[in-house]
Image (tube, rainbow, N blue to C red):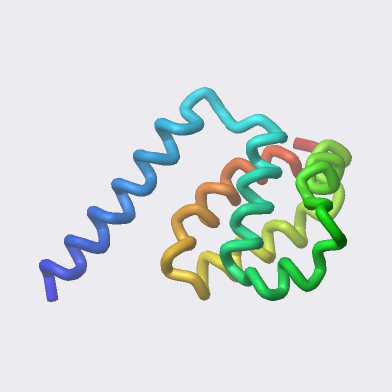
Length: 107
């Protein structure tokens, strides 16, 4: 069992390092919106596509939400749910939560 735990910890650390290197200088609002959108599609592709109107995407809407400080709690709740329910995307969700914190009003 110890090897399994060690392996899981190592995989998580590798994922963290990849993300840290990818956005070492910080994540722009555009990148954050793109990552949130991609995670939503990856987490529940059927629900995502059912709600998508035509060829539109949600990225511009997410950018506006982040810039205005709207729906941050909802985005955080979504990320928390992904972190708890989706092992493959849990590290990404946790990292995005860290970046999302700076968009809360008053921060």
